[in-house]
Length: 594
Image (cartoon, rainbow, N blue to C red; front, side, top):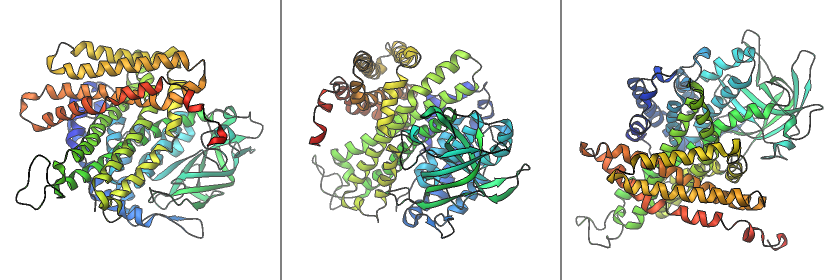
């Protein structure tokens, strides 16, 4: 069966040598995370992921969740105990506000732990992931009284959280929401409606579930401008925090899914359930986007995480599996055949995976660091730049990492041959689990439209032009370094192509919106490759600084950087060409001809 070991050396390399996280030790949160604390978290998190969560991954896949006649839901064997260990170990409090029982550490560190958990058991990791998203939304938009009531137990994981957006008639188009909220004399609301695809909507892991529900107050404006956000607890909470009666809501059914079987994906029925308005009426989307944006970064990491665990098992298989002889001569004369890792095409698949994974990890951690700076930097300009970077990169992180993460998992299965297609081998679960990440929290096509339709134009293009400046400044800083010339050249080429594509969209997308829509996917891919080029160049620089150490880790890092620039980054050229074809051939065929 598959295994997983957290790639601690690579994680430490990124945190300590590339991002240099210790240089922020003067800032809140970072001051509480000296190197020894971070190292202890990494080591402990790795043990928890590999020893507790990973053995339950196949169990959860085989058993799935079960809905009882009374509408309660039973999670797979071992999940309750694993969740208890997560809560008692304080793992869910890592980056939460100390005022509400959290440890107040950088979110970047919490993201590293989240990656480990998702690699080890993606379905399980969704429960605490969504809970932290609910915590963040309440922390950002709720009243002080609501924060005091809900945040301490959400922070620890004693209570879980969900997000309830989708309904049978609307997914992305939330303006079509029908769930209604009726005001009550005591200031509460009665929530009535149906929500679908609610991850963790019902489970047996936590004492309570705090549902965040989008609904429309009677008489509210049509469309998204009339949507409000409500806290709707599964079990009513008294003024003293005690649990009371069950609210008027239930799980109406569980979805039968392609993957993530260990996570309960529920149809939720609200039948006059008591809810409490969060923030202002008709302004619910603004607060929910806090949760959605955090979730989108987390989903991007899910793509990376499934690629990592699939790659680890594929690399192990390739070293052990003997089949055929090397085309350049026998490599294992003591065996009847050579291990398949000697074959160039097997190496190609492994190197594609590795170059993506290590670049994506750097990209995700770098973006998470921007989120930390946004919240704790005392410098207004630093906060503004971090906010711009987060907004610009969120759709790229979500879509690019899940697109390529799924491909990496598929390549890992391909490398196993026929064995990979069998359940016994265990590799096919990674492919099935990874597939959902391209769909939920806004499909990848929607992320691409968000990038070209909103993020590029925001604040007069301030964020994207600042990113161009980041690329230019990096190249100018290192262009005199002979060892860095191939990497600098790669970044320059990618930057020029991204600028070309951006200018084309600015000139042609506004005159014909179909041009923007038709080119958005390839533009996002071009953007993702450019971002990874910058990440790989930064990692190459850090590795070159240690070139004389004799540590093979740095030589391996540089070899993978060379592969990225020579074999992966050239894809950017084809994406640019597709961007600049616009909508003509995409929209030419009559609808009736399909």
